[in-house]
Length: 309
Ligand code: ADP
Ligand code: MG
Image 1: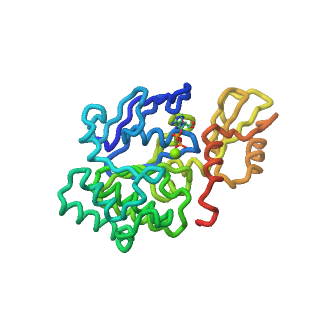
Image 2 (image 1 turned 120 degrees about the vertical axis):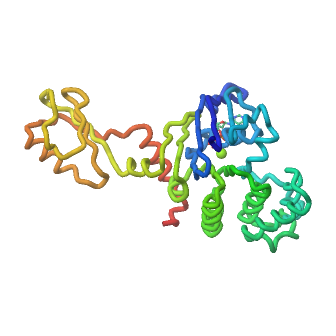
Image 3 (image 1 turned 180 degrees about the vertical axis):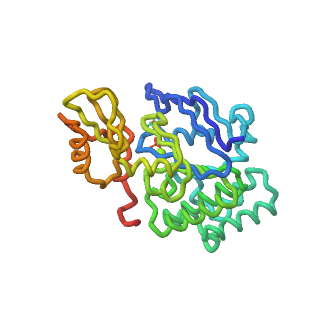
C-alpha cells in the first residue's frame, strides 16, 4: 500500500491554463519525499487537489489506498496539510486553534487537549497558547500551522513550501522536527523550490515543471547525476566502433557523434589528448545541457539566502 498514489491527474483553470497535464506520482509509506519545482510549476495545485481544496479536472488520488472521491472523510483523517498561506482565524488564541482542529477531526475533549499540548510543546509554542495568533511572528504562525496539521496524528503530512520566507533558526528547527516525526513513521511530502532543502531532508524526489513530472527518482541518484556533465563531440572521420580503453564513459551516438560524460571539475584537456591518441579527430564540441540540467541551475540559483552552508 502506498501513502499516496496519483494517477493521470489533470487540472485546467478557468481561462484554459493547464496547470497539471496528467501527472502520476507514488509515495511509499514512511518516505520523506520532495516535490521540487520552480514557481508556477503546479506544486500547490497538486496539494490543493490532494487536500480537496481544489477541484481536479480529471484523474485519481488515493491516500493510503482510500480514494479521495469515494471516501472523502476517511481520506481526510489520514492526512495533515500545511498550506502555503495562513489558514486559521488570527483572532483566536493559539491553543484554541489547535484544540478546535482536533475537535473537528472528532477527537475526544481529552485527546484533543493532550495532542494539542504535545505538539505545541514539540514546536515550542506552548508558552504562546493563550496569545492571539495575529500577534505571533511569521515563523511562529508557521509552527501553529504545523501543530494544527498534526493534531490528529495523520499518517501522511504534506507541507507546501514550509520554509519560504522564514528565518534560519526556524528553518533548522523545523527540519529537525520533520526528520524526527519521519523517523517515528509519519510519511512526509514537502514541496520546495530549494534544491538544497530537498537534498537535506528527502530520500526520494519528483521534479515538476509546467504541470509535468520531468523526473522521479531517489535523491541519491539525482545528486550523482548533478555531479556529471556530458559533452558532445562531432567527429571529422566516421567511426564504426569505439576504441577500447578510452577510459571515459563514452557513447557513440552515430558514426560522427560521440558523447562523453565526465565528473564536474574533471578537466577536458585530457579528453582531447586521449581522443587524439586514439586517432579520433574532432571537428566541434559542445556541452550537452538538457532541460533537466537547466532546470537544476535555476533551482540551485534560488538557494536558501546563500547563508545556509
Ligand atoms: P506552484 O505552487 O508550483 O508555484 P501553482 O500550483 O500555484 O504553482 O500554479 C500552477 C499554475 O496554475 C500557475 O501558472 C498559476 O498561475 C496557475 N494558477 C494557480 N492557481 C490558479 C487559480 N486559482 N486560477 C487560475 N490559475 C491558477
Ligand atoms: Mg505554490
